Every structure is written in structure tokens, then in C-alpha cells.
Image 1 (cartoon, rainbow, N blue to C red):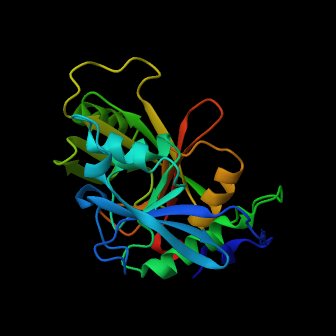
Image 2: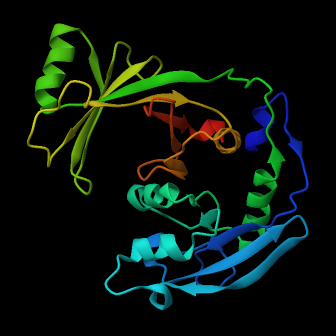
Length: 268
């Protein structure tokens, strides 16, 4: 189901005079099929309502300066691009690109380049006004806290406050453990997410341990486009989660607190 179908007040499509510059990670130029970390050259297009025009290929090796980190090279050489389409990208490089104004997305992985460019342009060409957002179906899902000792914290929240452990995972690749707790048998109610970073050897100061709150949403792509148009900081644009089919994005409130936007497969 298309993201925009959940909006009872559909925004108005407008003609965008300035082309939307989009970079693509593709092996042969036909499909969005390359992982960000494996791409040595990116195709760059100017896209308008009339279609896409290829303006060239940009190779990392041609733009590197000295022993510059390749990620820094990409940020610099694609600085004039608004969107980067890839088949897969990690959290760290995605946030780095977002920091320089490049929205890296894996939402069109496997699609033809032509179709992906047209879809991105259509979404970005929508004018978002001040019509109140229809948040029917949205709900607070969890709040995340960083803890120094996960077992100690689990003992406190379960034995002293009567919560149940809903899920627990160890992430060897990213060196952290994660647990969700709540008062129900599943995620039907607000939950608490606890995260213990394995490399952390110092206790967290009060306030430093807060991570984010999470909101379950529908139509996450259209919602994020609306938020971006309103100037809301978005350190992590929508992307597929590594361990599931959920789509997540992170925005910031006026005080810099992070808010995770989470869309389950049923809300796509």
C-alpha cells in the first residue's frame, strides 16, 4: 500500500522548476543494487517531472585527497546531491551523510534506476502545507535508556517493579546488548528498551543515559518528507532495519532529543 494513502488530507503535487539531483549506487546503471560500503563510483542524475538526465559518474578514487577517509570523500563529492539511493547502508554512514544534507535511502533497493528516480522525485515534488497530521494509528512504542549493567537493570525492573522481559538480544557486530521490558505479554503496550554498550567502562551521568523515545507510525516515507519540509532535523532518514522488515527513521525535537519513528511491515 502506498505511504500517501494514509493521509486523509493528501498534499498537493506541484511542478518543481529546479531539478532534484540524485546519486545512485548501481553496478551497471540499470538497478539500485550496490551496498554503500562496496560502491567505488556513483551515478548522478538531475531529475524533473520530464524525466531523469544523467550528468556523469563520480568515482571515489578521482575525488580523494591524500589519505582522506572514503566516507569524507563521498560526502564532499556528492555535496550537491539531495538524495543517495543504495541497496544497503549502515547507520553510521547514513548519519554522516545526513549531517551534510544527503538523504541516503535503501527504500528502492532492487528497483530499476529509472523507476526509483521517478518515485523519489514524485515524493519530493509534493507540497506539504500546515494541514494537521492525521495520527490515527500512531502510538508511543518504547523509551530507550542506556545502562551500565544490563543484568543488574533487568533484576531491578523485573523483581522490584514487576516488569516482564519481552525480548533480549546480543549484537556482537555492534558490541551491545538490548532488552525490552513491559507489563504485558507482548509489545501491545508501551515498553522500556535498555541498551548496554560492551565497550562502555564508565557509568552514565544522569541525563546522559537517555537515548530516545519511539513512535509507531504509518506512511513513514510521506511523514518524513513532511517533517523534512518543515525543517525538522533528521539524522537518520528512513531505512530498513538490519534484523527485520521494519522501517525506522530518527528525528530530533526542538531540544535535540531523538525520536525514533518505527513502521511495521503492515504500515508500509
